Image 1 (cartoon, rainbow, N blue to C red):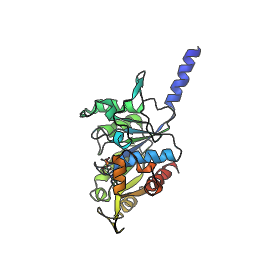
Image 2: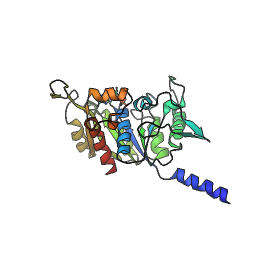
Image 3: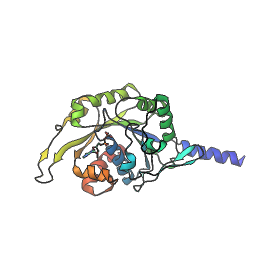
Image 4: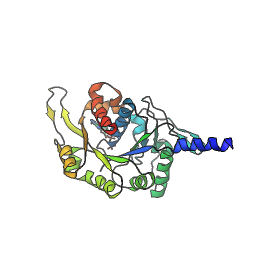
Amino acid sequence: VPGVSAVRVAMTAEKKARRLIAVGSGKGGVGKSTVSANLAVALKRLGAKVGLIDADIYGPSQARLMATEGMRPEAEGQKMIPVPTSFGVPMLSMAHLVKPGQAIAWRGPMAGNALGQLVDAHWGEVDTLIVDLPPGTGDIQLSLIQKHKPKGAIIVSTPQDLALIDATRAIDLFNQSTVPIIGLVENMAGYECPHCHAISDPFGAGGGEAAAAAMGLPFLGRIPLEIAIRKASDAGTPPAAGGEAHAQPFLDIAGHLLG
Ligand code: ADP
């Protein structure tokens, strides 16, 4: 029956292997969302077919970072259609599943179902999904690992976070599962004074690379602490989409992933 085979072809296309890359951190505020958004944009710039999932139920911030605040995904059948962004990276956020401004206080199973809706959306030709996880090691992380089997995980930390071994808990979670850790990104590493250009290290220097080496994990790169990164992020213009100076650290990490 032609109708049935057409449906089957459509389903196969929708089911094609789509790799999920989880981005996690030991605690909040280390720049996990910033790295996720910019990594997605950088991957797109390098030619990947990439989408972005904001699974951070405690503080979904991708709509602001990607300038899609107020946009609501449409649905086709039972599935959501990801929201397009100006950067060629379609996205869906936990924030899209609730009314704007509403607190998200889901229990484990509900949060797991919500995550499922984001992953099983109409992603079309997207073959790589960057998943911005909540900080720490909770229900969303377990649900992602068990049900959606990510291809790998990236851990974002500040040098300070590593020193305080918060990041190692996140690393441990993936190590206990079969999800390989792709590597560590050190964020807010080194601050160049915009006036005298002296480099200072508010959170200590070189900790990320040393910690990655000690744990036998690949080191994917460091991103400096820069006012420009914060400003561009708040303005919904990811630095990875802009000029070379600010895009380069993210392009380097993306290159690592594709390489
Ligand atoms: P998380 O997702 O880990 O909670 P965010 O990505 O939301 O962290 O970042 C927390 C704050 O720090 C945001 O205001 C963000 O703009 C800022 N930020 C993140 N990385 C940098 C950086 N490398 N330089 C300057 N500001 C940064």
